Image 1 (tube, one colour):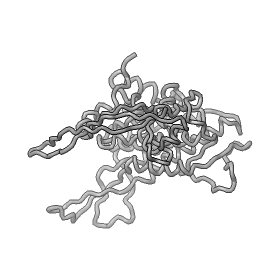
Image 2 (tube, one colour):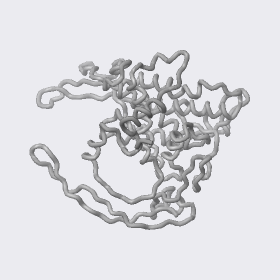
Image 3 (cartoon, rainbow, N blue to C red):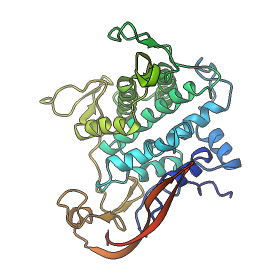
Image 4 (cartoon, rainbow, N blue to C red):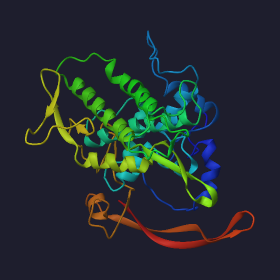
Length: 374
């Protein structure tokens, strides 16, 4: 078996990330998806062909281009986005899930590992699964929209969004914006196809789960679509900004993740009716909008490893000794206690710019205490 999962970042961002970011060496025992990344060469082509290409249909959606770049763009969105600039490469679904719910007993990245390892989504329709579906759908919109702008797809280009009515008359509406409209439409066809192609019995648990997935997919797409905003660049003599050119630009994926984390916290518990529709499990709460997350199953006990639910447990997870929140050792470790160890961190420091044009830094070493659950 070839070595598919050794590179954390795609080839076009790995070297840039290595130059631009602090090098930190820390000995940890956390369970995450850090060893399951984008891969290169034959394995990258295998992933694109087998994981990210939709099953053949009698009639392919018109949105699917003939080029192989598109499935790879989707693959990058579901891993470490190859279409994101180096500085934004960390803002992708799995990393975003790990950032948004780092202190939760549930490992969101662990869920992603189950998805790709077993070839199917986790079976539990929990709140965490709802977040995973939403952030993955958002990642597809993000990657495809950006790929269109960068000319990497043969079926789309720059955004054709209409000029905003509130844009000052003397500002130009042009440039090459992120094609959020195409990204949204493609993600709807691509991500939802799995749920729509199945014919479940009306009112069954399977239908309820499919409707839950569709709702959360839409919430993720809308988060990206609605958070796209106008970006402008000044023109003029000596930076006078006498003229501006503006275009449509995606929000940072971290901000999208923040929005979806809020939706995760307020996710609505639902149940399937005999008529084949989702309804609130508790009618006292407000009906969820298309932008809200929903779930149909309570979250399982994530303290212990459980292959059935996809839980990786909290043994070996980093915890915060001084915190009283979910990231605190008392709660995170589920009462089992924790171990302390010394971690040597090497970071760049005392950086100076030299003319012209490079930055030279020293290396600083620091020994810190860290804690992991027993």
